[in-house]
Image (cartoon, rainbow, N blue to C red):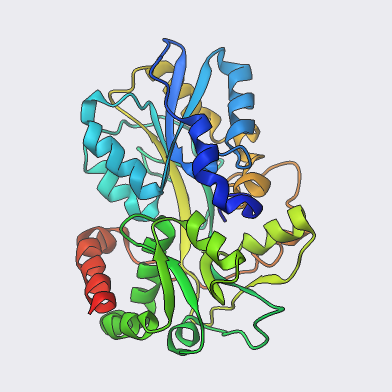
Length: 336
């Protein structure tokens, strides 16, 4: 789910400042660019920092940016002069764009332990968690929830919040989910959805925070989101809407920079991602699913999220080729 303590959405900006990049860069400091909720004190960042620093005899410095799209934009702007060693928080749908910058190095990590639908063979990106996008609702206030993406789009009485596909990986995921379901009719579907959309936020945190305040009936998040409420709050009223058409998956990834100021530490961290020291923080820190098998089973609250789902995955090459055109299609349809 991301990826934050849902109780403290409104405090993200302030809290993430504690992870702001320090001008004092030491030879044994590893700089990792990531999104705000990952680095926040309620996300997995602090525990990962603690675990990695026990092994590396170094300082792990998370640089918290406002969105996944912000990570890529920042490193594109900085180019070879970037002080980032590792990028953590891009996803499948941004991999091609990130690789095309020419700034990323091959990881050299043994990924045979990764357990996803398909064997992981990419030489640049290492996966660190995965899940499915889903709209979340409050079962105490929405007694007759939709059972499909099309019902969400078409129900004009439903107040909807989602994220901007230009800046947010969930927003980009919804765009591809819509394209998978509606194809050439996506523009018409976006117009229909726009007529009962409350707002489109830059990132996931703002959207989920508004939903928790009662500003919408449904919000784009993850099928793992209800697990947070059950485990952390003992609250079972938040549920993921069924998706008869199938769900769109997300795999989040990390990559290291060719120009990394500390290449040795960057390589060590890339290997660390697929160890229990990192992966054990994911389920109840980032509220997503780990990518390797762990000794401890996931809490039962994740059972719903683990139910088999029909994956609606568009080929990466097709996404890379059409991403800008499809974003323009969304923009035109929702601003007319």
